[in-house]
View: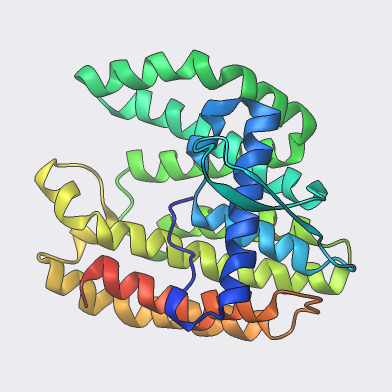
Length: 278
């Protein structure tokens, strides 16, 4: 994932922001514990949202403890005592990172290709562990990457078609947050909307760079300038947010509803406006 699903910090209460940071730090700690210290580099706001969503659908209170930060021992952070709900998001982060490395090895040239080639063996063991513990997640991500690569290499010009693999991957991953069949359907819709949002925003944000470097970007087939891109993508991003919000409102949220709502109703819009300088 790309780090586009995040909070609107100024609109959160202090206690809500502290809880959000606690989940972020707990996810970082869980990654380090299960997959090694370098795996912490995979952490992004998207996985924090996934972790919060997974926790929010479970009963019970999440106890918090204060411990020293691994990267900065002089600093103390809040951590969740029970990290069971963080195992799945951690595995998603690790598996996605490894496939991203493989993808970059195939696409890049020169020193960049060499750099990613050197990273591959470093993360291979962590990937094997994550995929062994969560083979279904590995299957989801592999199918997503293979389909995405196939569409891009064929020079697909259809925006809806090329955005679909990311949307479907997130829909399947979000469904893992609940065992209730009704909730799964709602999570599927929420994941699809946010996955489409992520792909569209990433394509729009990378348009100028991809154009300069002559890389594939589906928006190049219909847009000539960044202004054209923004005009085309902004209404579609709003549609994704609004449809995602409708799904979110149907979920049986047990806790952290205000934090998740902040991300859905405010954070997504704030993020795309900042990324696209709208």
